[in-house]
Image 1 (cartoon, rainbow, N blue to C red):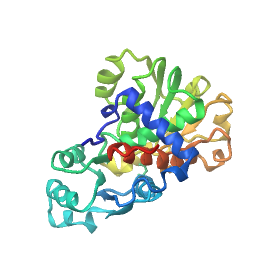
Image 2: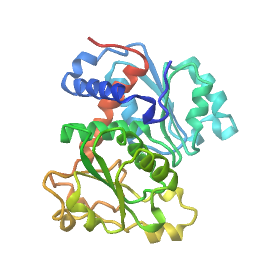
Image 3: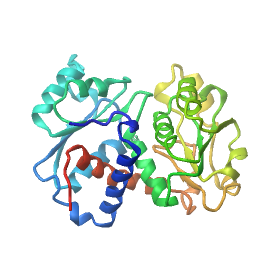
Image 4: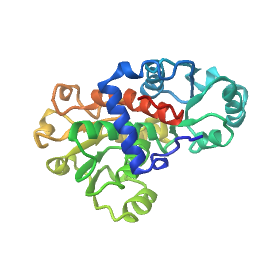
Amino acid sequence: MRHLMSPLDFSVEELDKLLDIAQDIEANPAKYAHACEGKKLATLFYEPSTRTRLSHEAAMLNLGGSVMGFASADSSSASKGESVADTIRVISCYADICAMRHPKEGAPMVAAQHSSIPVINAGDGGHQHPTQTLTDLLTIKSLKGRLNNMTIGLCGDLKFGRTVHSLINALVRYEGIRFILISPEELRLPEYVRHDVLDRNNVPYEEVVRLEDALPELDILYMTRVQKERFFNEEDYVRMKDFYILDKQKMKLAPEDMYVLHPLPRVNEISVEVDDDPRAAYFHQAQCGVYVRMALILTLLDIHVD
Ligand code: CP
């Protein structure tokens, strides 16, 4: 039995295979429509979500399976003090696979240790968000045709943004990747990611504050929201929240074949006037999230479709 806690749980070969399945699902959805008949997915969300929870559920429904779950800790027995370990033992009696989001780093790992069904980490605190990374990789591959030899700009809240941490972990395994880290001083990428992931893998990167300085060099611009829920005081959040706003004027500085990704939700960091730009790929990215989660469910349940 396998779980997904981090994008590194899959080798590059396994990841490539999973992305191939996702692309086949996109091209031939009918082929997969009954692949999970009789299987149940439980979504255990202790923290708010729109895309991650509903795209997991859409994925299982598209595969012919069924779904159950809770959308907040308040509507589960966590509010009465039940532990994650006890909850997952119980859910293992009801479902075949589960996706868990939790505000505490490591909570899905605790669940995996006590589970008899595959557990998918659907985001744990400021730590990892591996299914978002699978989504991002599929989106980049579908737009650029490759995952190597690219300059990727990561912009915004690089300190608390778990999607950024997971994406860096995954992309450093491909040849010719270079990062431009675009953030205010207070929201720089944590030292443990810069040192343990970028430096240790000899991946070139530079840190800049101005988005305008980075834009002309990028193949992919990955925008992120300032993570209000991870700040300790409102004042700091208010000071940081509109530090970057990508608008039409700034898009003029970007190459014609640069794509803008964003894990969403956005707040102000991408102006809605950018949505009509053919390089705005964030809604396509949300659609890719369903295909890749279908491929992930099949992989973790060891279901093969000819
Ligand atoms: N991208 C993402 O994780 O969105 P949700 O918080 O809506 O799931």
